[in-house]
Length: 114
Length: 114
Image 1 (cartoon, chains in turn purple, cyan):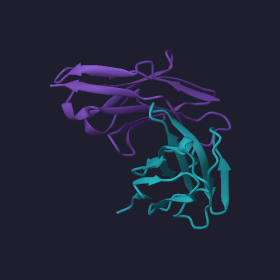
Image 2: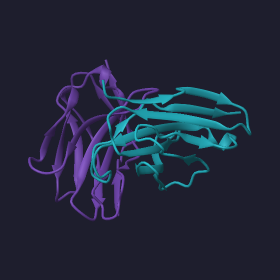
Image 3: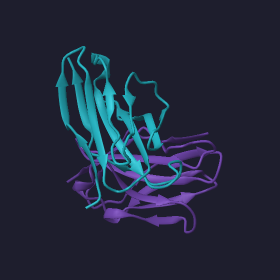
């Protein structure tokens, strides 16, 4: 079994400030963790993933995510937000026993104010 | 350029009509997926395929059907559209096992049934 939770429906941050979008997961096997971004009227775009190794994963557009095994979390971060980062962000988990596809969270809307 | 395509992007149709949503990928991926995305943002897996002539139902029950006659093509069909089918439909593909591999998404089809 596997599941993922994104506790915040929306995150608001001022341009230039650091941002964090939270994600926690549950999986029966080793976790495979992903972040995707969705812009209006578009499909999901892959940002980054964690499989093994360094707990800090760097991805596209200056985003990074920190894997924390003890807290079962995989929060998405960026040191300095841009207005163009405003979008919908999805966390996803894979690796659960018997699962044949990723399980996606409910999404977090990021709003970056100028 | 390798990519994943969906047509049409937008479709408005009357109740009772038969519709087919097209999905094609040029990445040579064996695994393909259909997701339904509600206005409330969450993605629900409705169909997936391991390869040619292999299709299975996903987590969310759907009245739609799929076929996989060619590796690159994974169309979704609704025999008789109803207003409850109004949603966004996202197609995705992956190279690996599906349960752990990065999924790549098409731009989506926004379906409205009147």
